[in-house]
Image (tube, rainbow, N blue to C red; front, side, top):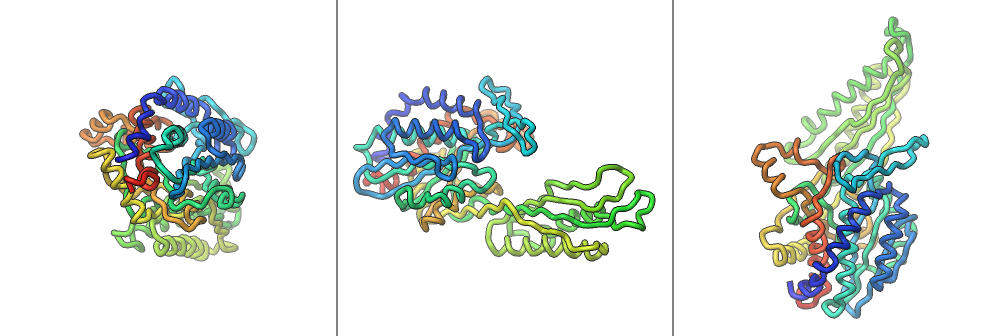
Length: 420
């Protein structure tokens, strides 16, 4: 990777500091829209490297702009927020942080999705790019996005004028640490992350004494029938070659065993990869909910609310090919193809707002030996913690090195003339 090698020459020197930074971020996670400590640290470090920093975008978002002569503008994004999960990794730098819940009660907070890795790697890459300006030309925008987990952080930053506060990029880049072997990278053109749509359905019944069910209309039974019928969307309405997932993740009703309650509420998550399938599944969810309520004689139709939607992440073909070529040159046989993921992201809203192409890739975070043993035993699902698991703990190295190298390699494929 001509030019990129020169940029990465300082990695050995900054590696100890990056590992210390990662441990600090991991031990001090912050929920979406509350990333005050994290964003302040990002702003401080970017300022120290000579970036023009714009802080407080969308609340806690940060953008650092480094202009280095004529050339392309490349935006690289890292998300910052953590999750309301109690950490069970046993790490010496494990989080013991709590944050107020909706009712004021303390909730444990953990970096269970690896955003601490993302922040550390982008700060490392941003520093190396700043220290090797003779090796590249153009503008680098290091963007630290708030509130990816609730799905409204990108929109918040865009609503707060992000598109007017940074130079318009020619391409946007992002990466995510995933539970495959550390040291490996993978990407793919086309659909890489699914869309996600959440539905909240409230079923209305008529309360009665448990001994007189004929006097009521039981929303527990109606909700149960909806849960069962929803399982037929993927198995009977979507073709077997079209990926889709429908999950009922929450069902609440009643307060004691001797009452038929007035209502039941369920929350449903849908994952699809294209807009046609997305629309078809959405219509089926709503049709089934209304039909089951009508069949049971419910006193009124169900309330159906869609919330927390994420767009699909569909990698641009040309941009992904350029990054994949850069990865092949830099990582050799440690670069490969990323399988489509049924996780979801709001990253694509940023390049879509600018009207520019983007590409999104994965880096491994699991100890390679542990992964190999689990693969040999057929126990990957049970033995390898995945993102959002209380035991998710990327190994420090070579995860951090790989993340820094991947950002530099990808950005250099636009910013280093001899690599373009």
